[in-house]
Length: 344
Picture 1 (tube, rainbow, N blue to C red):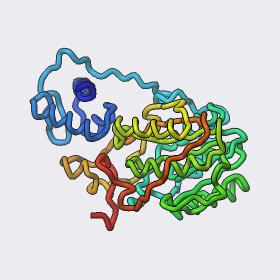
Picture 2: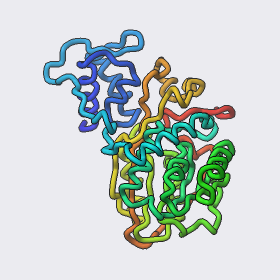
Picture 3: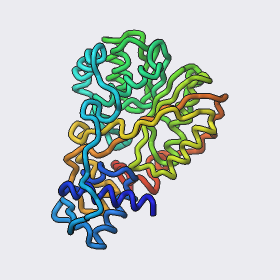
Picture 4: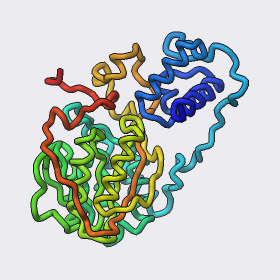
């Protein structure tokens, strides 16, 4: 009842401030998509909430709930990080260079975060001492974090492995022009073992894993295997929308058992922009769209937290189980993951 009661309050207080569509509402609560969906439907069944067209309204006054008050810092989007000074110069160049970046394709479950959020990820790594003079490994770089890091010139070396040949070419071209000798990028499928030469060589690794049971374990284990030992840091992007707290508990335990301590979690650190990602073609295949007649989102709602963990004990990596493309991208919580041509 604890989680459901919290979601109920979050929905009711949001609606007391005014009507909202599904995507606006889900952005104003903090549970995963299934729990939110079930709680919203329960409120409709009991008559507390009514849907009119694309918008949800309170059916009557809720005296014991105050309207939602905005509390997020408008300058830093709640991250505590402001892009200014030297990093403002980097940001301006980043926006210019990435203007014609490759768009996502459904086959790889792609999507990139807002440019300012990529830059804030880089800023947070800088703040934590994980940028200057560090050797950094990035597994999957839809967000072009390597480009942001490269523009600072602060890292010692950056290695990117990425399945999408378009992104490989984009990062290669950037490196040759703006950061020669700093960034190495190669095409790589996470289903394959990492090259032996990449293991145990880096002080920092970064990944946005697929959030299924198989996906998280595979991506993060591959990433952790590149770290050199105590004091090395792993950065992981992780949502609450397709990863329930039971998953978070399992994932945190995996990190602990591997010899890492979670040092930081910044909630809702990065948003995935709807307009820039141009996801409209994918939405009809989402599980949530199959369950409810919903409009295409017109506001950014899918977001992830940024997790930092540091190696404090000898690394003990979990065994990597056999994973196929079929069981990499989907599990019972993958309600906002697009099917791509060839899926059933």
